[in-house]
Length: 264
Ligand SMILES: Nc1ncnc2c1ncn2[C@@H]1O[C@H](COP(=O)(O)OP(=O)(O)OP(=O)(O)O)[C@@H](O)[C@H]1O
Ligand SMILES: [Mg+2]
Image (cartoon, rainbow, N blue to C red):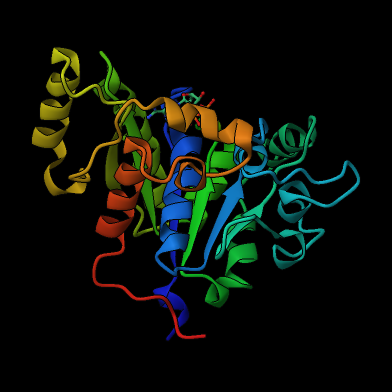
């Protein structure tokens, strides 16, 4: 198996609270459950992907902030989770990641810092999921330079599709200047309330605009998904037969269709 069998996905939308981190954690956990070695890289200064899986680096421990500064290898900061095959590259607590972003803004040309760090250990992973912050700033651009594709979670709400316009524009700019094959390859409907008219309208609109790029399975509004982070585990462990767990398992099945974990 070659390094090209590793898939790096940036989970991104500049709108807050649409389910990016919930998707990183639970899609990651569902891929891991299928036997895929999966790494979640926490690129959000809020650090929710790390804490939601019980990973809290001590204050002086190196994190993704040092990796982006090219002071540490990605390998050296990766933490296991309580779930088999699922690992996290944590964000720092406090302001360190926001400070790194401010430094990145000073670069005349964005450097592929995250890409270089991932390339150095790419073969170790089947999937690398990048949990992006709710902005299209330099941390997200670094994620887009490193990613094979973008996965956009779309909350079943009014104006959901408008949010996709800015994302598409930035993806297009990164494709033209920095990462020629980048595209939004996947759209995932989140917090869907199937019985409500609004949810089905947003769903119909998204499917007619983006066709097969929209996962067939959508993620329902499910309170177990909201509870799981406080239990410091994925919904697959917190409530294994909940609708939320089943939905993320379905998405993992669609995403990994035809692939098998690398032999190790
Ligand atoms: N399908 C769902 N059902 C119920 N609650 C959900 C669902 N998805 C996410 N949530 C809850 O909604 C809130 C926002 O979700 P999440 O943190 O995943 O969004 P985000 O896009 O990562 O937010 P941010 O932009 O702040 O990083 C969280 O409290 C989460 O637990
Ligand atoms: Mg988040």
